Image: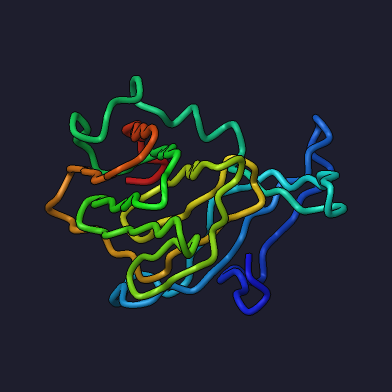
Amino acid sequence: MAKSESLPYYAGQAFQNVPDGRCVFIPWYGLQGTGPHFAQYMGLPQDLRLVRTNAGLRLSRLPVRELEMLRDGDGVAFERFEGELVEGRVVVEPTDATRISLDLRGVKVVYDPRQERLSCAGESVYWPLRGGKLDVRFFLDRQGLECFSASGFDCWAFRQAQPNPNSRRLSSSVTAAKSATCVAWKLKSIWK
């Protein structure tokens, strides 16, 4: 993440005494434009780890593996997906001419591989290619969009991403890429 960009999370809770030794973090962040029902939001629980890299120790944050229990069936290509609560993964090996745009239930997400920027709902964040690839795992629910890189070194919560309540579809447009995969899982709700 660029130094000028800070995560929208604040006042989170970290649990270091998890039985299997993990450090689990539950972030908290403010929402914008959500009406009278919600003004604040608990983000997805995340496993925090320190990872040794060539640049020194770095913090990795990935969604906890227990979230996979919410998957309702197998992952399908975006074009075959229909549902409200979504987990998705987009893996693209771009060229200089690649253009990547996603429509996630009316939420527009664009990635510019030249600038290495992920943009959505008026926000743009530095999101570097790692190993020459864009590899993003995202969760879209009724109120927001949270994105994580496969390495865990990049994550962002798009606070103004408001899905269309009448839309249950996903689509992707990836041009001039060496390879591209867009897969989504329908999720069961933990709250009705």
